[in-house]
Amino acid sequence: DDSVAAEAAEAEREASLMWESHPPPPLPESLEEMARFILSPRCKSIAILAGAGMSVASGIPDFRSAGFGMYDTLQPELLTATEVEREAIRVDPTTVFEKNMFIQNQLPCLELKRPFILGTHGRTWKATLAHRFVELLHKKTGKLTRLYTQNIDGLEGQCADLPRDKVVDVHGSMGQAHCEICDSPHGFDWFCSAVRSQIKDVTGQDPNAPEVSTPIPCRVCGQNTVKPTIVLFRSNLPIEFFERIRTDLPSVDLLLIVGTSLTVAPANSLVYKVPHSALRMVVNNEPVGTRLGIRYGEESTRDFFGQGKCDEVFLELMLHLGWIDELKGLADDLPEESAKTLRDRLASANTSGCADDVLSDG
Image (cartoon, rainbow, N blue to C red):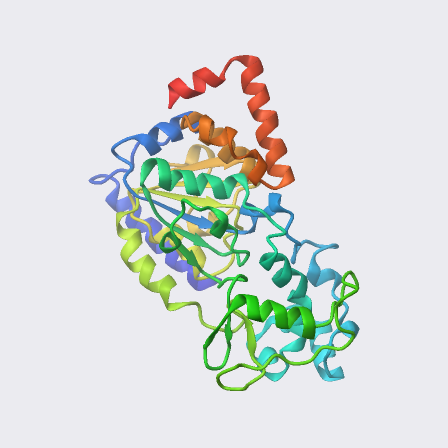
């Protein structure tokens, strides 16, 4: 988006003018140094912007990846829709999650989301090491100001020591239900029971699903517009997002940018709305956000790149923070991929004798 890039460029220009009088802290050159900065008195407030990469290790189905994501494998002919609606979905698969389409016909959206809705209700997926980092950051340091998550999976809700008011669901949550028209909340247990008994399974994996879908009306206004509290395309973001960034960002000392492509506005605006003196740490497989002013390599003055899978990077960071004892008790509560990453790393630390070194570094 050109307007976002222009805003970011202006913010970077202002930052360059400010740095003489208010320079950022020395940029850490390793995860060990980043851990020291997090624990230092200079770092008092940490905000996190999270994307899909934070939840990859949980095994949640993918929507966007070319060739095998849900959008690429979508079969409109299986959906309960008119031929006109199906053709619109063929042309642009994201149409199925647009507000106008949902108000016109809620069934295609609920049919595609059925496995996700019921999987969320049944806790099919577990919070990853990256989620546990956020939980421990709050529990161990008290420096977490807010987690802004673009994910709708609600996995951070499994972290018992992470208060709900520390989380802003930028794009809503799959773990709650409401009416899109009147916004009346509906019990998630009730909603999931209705989805299970009234919405067909287009994947063909649930033998107990009904053969034909029937609408789920709102129990307040009567419209067929009950859904998870996710933000549909062409809808406004929750007002909480705008209120929180206005109060949170001015005092932030470190922004963690986790597993996101930074292509979706306005969530990506956090990158250039934090103070000019704040450090930014990108945790991702590849560089992102260059159009938003993030710099890599020798050009970087306040941006640290933690390259790699989110779980692996945050595991190393947690080891340097000295949180190894808490990590040892997590394995049984993690998804399989995260648990293997943790066990392999702890075994490596014990074999090399560096576990004690890690603790002393913290």
